[in-house]
Image: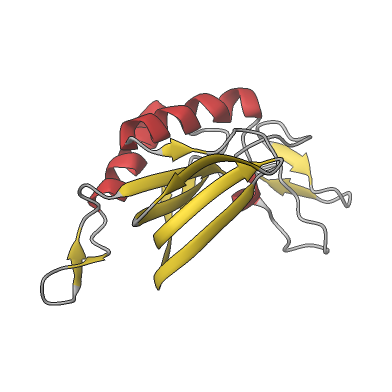
Length: 165
């Protein structure tokens, strides 16, 4: 999610004159278990967390509030933290979440070398869903549409790509 140019719902050009279909109704989140993560804009710290999850969130055209809520609930329930026996069996619990808008999760480089972002929702559609998702998780946030510097210290590493229709 974030600022981008071009693309409307339906079919679009991929930047190299090829027409392609948009991904329909599949919100995406790249979730990383971290011991720490932070985001800065223009060198200014915006948000930081300790142990928890860094979520890069992408929204497409048909996503809606119900999908954003389901994905937030799924992230909260993911059993990716060690239990007393050292197995990944514990959910988020009291740990923290940092959410960063990431329209490039919808980059499509199947044709050519310049990714197309026509499957990413336009900012006026994506931003309210990003805010809703973040609020439901109680997540700290980056700045929607800004060029951000994201830093993380991975824990594991554990990285999951979640997609919900």
